[in-house]
Length: 116
Image: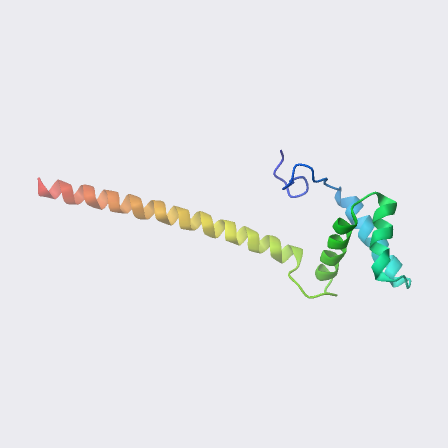
């Protein structure tokens, strides 16, 4: 299994859609809404036309609205940045624990050498 964000799947049965399809579907929904269609049925209709899950499309439209500033929330770029920082923080904490353990080990070795 690949580890890139576009192909990673948290559930074995979960389908992954290409970014081009996602972008096209979101554009279709946004255009239909801009043309006066009601938002409620538009997502389901477009999802059915493209053969994708309506909840997936609804989520993509929501994220596009957040990224575009039309809806409050954490933008995708910021979410990725936070995840990277949290991962780096975990790695640094782990490295710190290793260094503390090594420091205590070597300090005990030095103290043991003086007692002889």
